[in-house]
Amino acid sequence: MGCAGFTCSKNSLCALNILYVMVSLLMIGIAAWGKWFGLVSSFQVVGGIIGVGVFLFVVALAGLVGAMKHHQVLLFFYMIILFMVFVVQFSVSSACLAINKDQQEHLLEVGWNNSQSTQTDVEKTLNCCGFLQLPGPNDTCPAACFLQNTCTTCANKIQAHAEEVLRFVGGIGLFFSFTEILGVWLTYRYRNQKDPRANPSAFL
Image 1 (cartoon, rainbow, N blue to C red):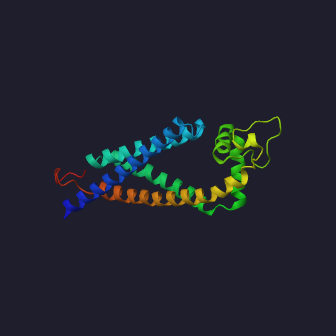
Image 2: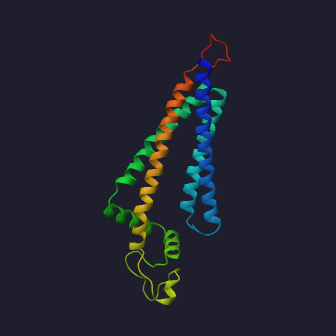
Image 3: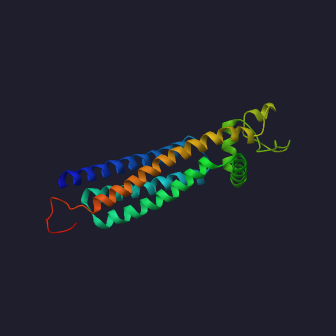
């Protein structure tokens, strides 16, 4: 029974970390693909996504190695880091789901004003110009509608998508935060089990 429980915990933890590795590689791949094809020109956005992907990959790899080798130190640090990630991700996901329209508009305007490259990406993608005001006659805009003088401002178009994106991101983040607390529980349970292949008198 002890062997079955040990093996079950080990396999579950390995499967969970393989899932995290796949998600991290997907994040890195999507960010690199978006940058390569010019869908996202902001280095900060791409760098941020790749950074999160690399961090998740390293944490998942540490968890995977710790689970395979039943390594006490790796499993301990993995459990602590995963719990901290859970707290942050749960808080951010809850905020995404709870944010109201006034707060959305304020955050979108702040984000718009902080990055010229993001403005360019949004204007090209949504075919609009400016956030709340159209550009003047001496200004330029990368949107196709600018040459035809048929542009509208981007604020309403962004807000139409922002609520859906926030709900989606919040829901996905909330789902993964519960897999993280499951990972913490599995790690704690697995870490305190004895390896049946080892010396029965030694606690590993």
